[in-house]
Image 1 (cartoon, helix red, strand yellow):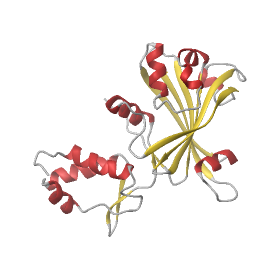
Image 2 (cartoon, helix red, strand yellow):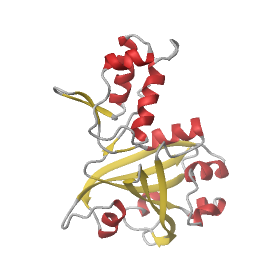
Image 3 (spheres, helix red, strand yellow):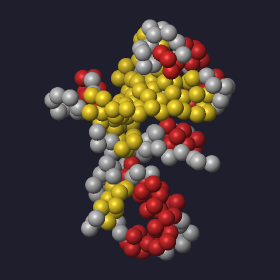
Image 4 (tube, helix red, strand yellow):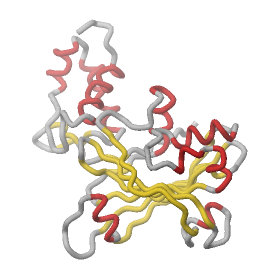
Length: 241
């Protein structure tokens, strides 16, 4: 490897291997010495690369072993917006999105106040399961107000757009600005169990993330309810600047 390789490139290399399933949850990462020799860099560079992977929740220290790959990870919206900005894609390496349902429903007591509409108001919904390496990592239901669907008719089709919010924001003429993410836990519904491949009988705890995404003009572009199973790690990294 060239001497110009930096810590960011090394982190990107192992991030991709983890996302593609080459390195699986529980696998031991190469030692820092091995990584340094492979890329021809100093240990300080390797340390910085490993620190990035740890901060991102991709790896964990394990006593007596070293560094191991963490459990399944579901990226937060900030990571996905950044990914789309840099690659034009909302899904990472090894990820796929399968649409399960598209249609109109009455906004329930969870969704209605976040869309600022009365309960029962017809809203558009898209339900999908996102997998990485063929393994489901989260089940999402995205709800859109009428003004979003009016300018983004593609959302009514049962196919993945790859970047629904980005497309809607562009058509509405306002950039995505901020997001409120509310996290709680509850038991999975039968539909969620099927979508996530949870076959254990009885109550299964899941994590629920309710995400309300605002445009720069304060209009809501999407309310999404994301469900992940117990072992899945949810990642947040927010700027404090």
